[in-house]
Length: 243
Image (cartoon, rainbow, N blue to C red; front, top):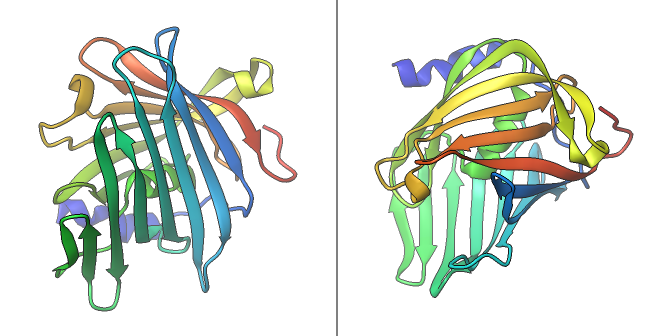
């Protein structure tokens, strides 16, 4: 029952207006001063009703032992803030990543396909997020002051991410704006990593998100076994927006 708190409580809060067609956010992925890669999140065209297309792209920098490229195309319900369709293409070293799943909110089923499985059906599934949909949830509920649980699905079964959306404010330097200090709210969270997390990630993270309707993450810190990995906003395209 605790895991359902999000479904009931979050709807009572005012959501930030985070979905804008053509938005493009570019992040440097860093370990300390070392750049590990680049992450881009783009909001695409409407997909009918309250649904919208979104894309996430990641590729590694020229770092020894790292060779990954990943492209994820989502259809997200921008009203319910849950995932409707997921398609992934990429590789991690020699391992290819090719998978698709489609969520039916009426039947509450997932149809899953990858190179070894075709249209495998999972029944009795509540609305959920992937990494990109969680990213938009963090933005939508930024500054609400509540604590919520977000069901997520990845390679395995459902896992939960719990987040505390504080009203604590902190200024953060932003490379996207010539290191200008931007006023942000702080979001603290922890993901259930299921014991399979890369780099010894604990699942704990802290996000610094602009204190406005756009609610753009300026920086996200993710704890690993030694230190942390950071997502640092490097470039931003959003019509009529300044922090």
